Every structure is written in C-alpha cells, then in structure tokens.
Image 1 (cartoon, rainbow, N blue to C red):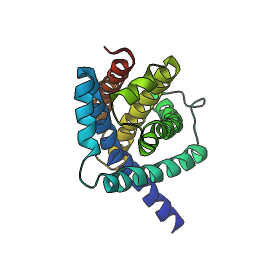
Image 2: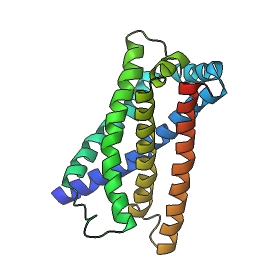
Image 3: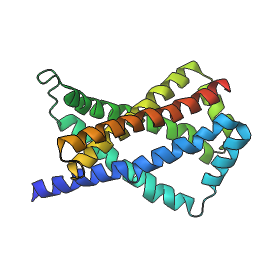
Image 4: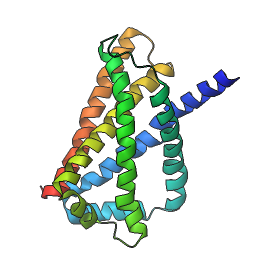
Length: 205
C-alpha cells in the first residue's frame, strides 16, 4: 500500500513539474521577454497578466499549490535518491544528479524571486519594468538570476525527458534519443529567452 502511494506521489510530482509548473515557467519567461522591446512593451504585458480574471485563484491553484507540492516532494527525493555518479560515470547518471542539484538551486531562486516581486508588490511596490531593472542592475543579483534561470530551465527540460520516459511516451532507444535532442533544444531556446531578458533589464539592450 505504501509503495503504491509513493508511486502515485512520484507520478503526480512528475506531472506537476510539466503541467502546470513547466508551462507557467515558459509563459513567465516569454512575457518577461517583452522587456527586450522596451519598458512600455513590458509594462503592457505585465499589466495584462496581472489583471487577468481570477488572477489570485489562478496563482494559488495553478502555480503556488502545485509548486509547493513539487518542491516538498522534490526535496524528499533529493535526500533519499541514490546517486551513482562516481561509480557509473555516464551522461544520464550525471543528468540525474544535476536534476536534483538544480532542483534545490531553483527552489532557493524561486523563493527569493517571489519575495522580491510578488511580496514587494503586495507591500505597495509597482509591478513594472522599474522593479526588475532596480533588481538586475546589481551585478550580484544579475548573476544570481542568471544561475537561477539556467537552473530552472534545465530542471524543467531534463524533467520533461524523465516525464516522457516514465509515462511511457518514449520507451524505445530511438524515441529516447529524439526526446534527448528535443529537450536539449528546449533548454537552449528557453534559456536564451530568459538570459536575453535579464540582459535587457540590466543593461537596457
């Protein structure tokens, strides 16, 4: 019974990592990418997302609760998983290790990012271009965000590979190879979108 419960929780953990958390990550980075086109463009996009109907309910039930479950179970998995990187030195085992490592980095990054944005907005700050510009003009925070974005995107892309394999969508060696290249492409494209956005906020270019 306990094994069935753990199997269910891990499947749910995997599913939530892709839907809705992964989709929200992509949406969030794409919306932020409007900063590349200027302050007014970003402010319009951010205002549109902030003023969606039932935005608070959407944030709680589509983002925060799934993210909280995924994070708590993810931390448990990190500290109970058996990593064999030193014994079995091959790419997939290193990716297994990096998945756990970037999960912890991403959790720290998200907690800080939420504090710097959502919590500050709740305390009266404006959700606009100036908020992120003020954060990212600090070199320390810029590189912190670079590391955080890369960790989050890697965690999603590599987690997507695991999801497609464990859920039976990619069982054959050929299909797994295709999925590997596809998730690598996703990592590169989404990382570019995220880093390009950070550069726009920090340097105005």
